[in-house]
Image (tube, rainbow, N blue to C red; front, side, top):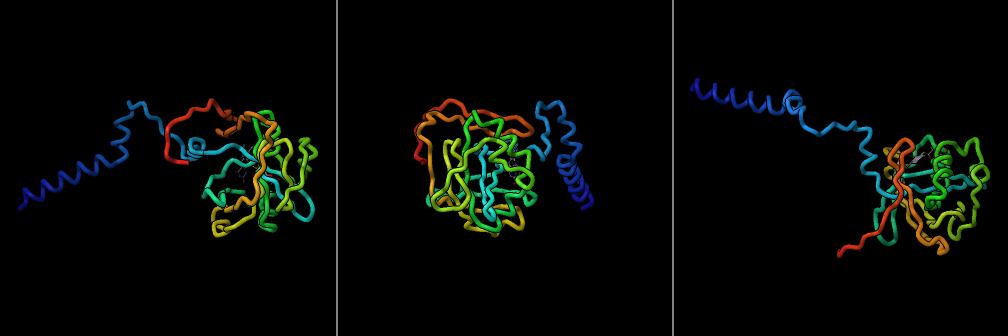
Length: 207
Ligand SMILES: Cc1cc2nc3c(=O)[nH]c(=O)nc-3n(C[C@H](O)[C@H](O)[C@H](O)COP(=O)(O)O)c2cc1C
């Protein structure tokens, strides 16, 4: 009986040892390096950096946004996180409308500039030399210099309070056919971007 209890204790101790942080430290010769959790988004951030326009009480504004993802095909639904500190957040909450404008590489420097100042103090369309164009279904303007513009309305606010996450429905989509092979830019954090690369085609049943 005593021997069985002792064996049980030994097994338990060896399991605990394997699970303990000391076990992980023993493998420090491993080439893997721990990545701070604060940097995880830099690996997973999916789509291109976009511009989000809003209009509140007749005043148009634009911000830079990279935290967005597709949620459904048709009607297209897009989830996006707009910080409650952003002037754009107030407009989006108040009006429920925005335009997602997709810039290509030549606009990269402006895109970063737009993401580093606030519409509270700056008329960003004038400051960055962007041309607002009337949209068809929403009040916020399209951006003429962008190769695609998506007119959106907020369709679900259930996660706004918790995560500042809006679900947008794309009501109307525009592309500029004169921009032939637009190269999108993708955010890697703190001023680092990857430029959209070469297209490869593979057999796939997925759309
Ligand atoms: C590359 C880049 C990506 C950004 N992505 C987001 C984002 O996804 N969500 C967000 O709330 N702010 C994001 N920002 C920050 C806003 O663009 C920034 O706070 C901006 O000043 C807000 O403008 P506003 O106060 O006129 O709304 C990003 C900034 C940069 C430079």
